[in-house]
Picture 1 (cartoon, rainbow, N blue to C red):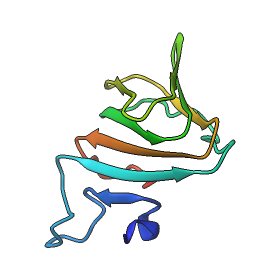
Picture 2: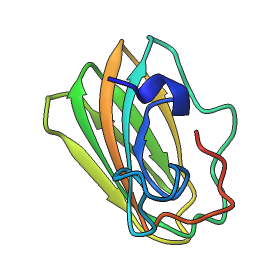
Picture 3: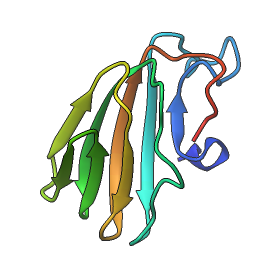
Picture 4: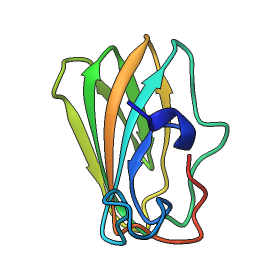
Length: 109
C-alpha cells in the first residue's frame, strides 16, 4: 500500500492528473490510528459530505450535539456539508473514510 505518502489518502484531487487515483468527485482514506490519536482541533466549515467506516478498534467521532462511538467492524457514521467534527481513537483503530466532492484547497490530512 502506498498510502503513507499522503497520510493514508488513496484517492482524490491531490493525486497527479492522469493518475487513476486522481478524482475531483471523491476522496478515500485508509486511516491507521494508535490509541489516543485525535484531531488537534475541530474541522469547521466543512464543504463535503463524509462517511467513516470502522474496520477495527474503537473510534469516536464528535459532531455538534452528539458523540458517536464506533466499536464493531462495519459501524459507520455519515455527516454532511456544514457539520463540524472531530475524532479520537479510543483503541488502536483502522478506519476507511470517504469524502465527496474532492475539494481543492483543503489540506490532505
